[in-house]
Length: 106
Image (cartoon, rainbow, N blue to C red; front, side, top):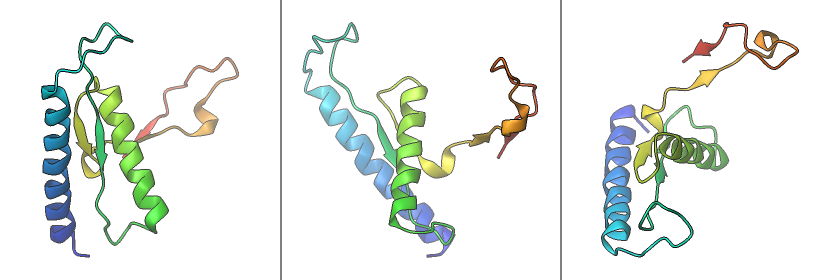
């Protein structure tokens, strides 16, 4: 799949996810388990590209996007291609669990 097709598909999926998210929010279902007020959802979207290994990897990318949406404050949709991935070399972790500062960002 060329990157333009994947990008277009990702945008379409994001529109669908946003439509669902806004519909759930508009229902105004009280969230009695939290002080957040109303039930909301977050969504993670991913589109298959040439670099996507298989369906499991695609689901993993969508899951990564979902957790990024939650990290950013919930009640939002995130596309995997927009997620800034950060990797930490295990050698950069000191014995006390602190980082030495050699984090890599991709």
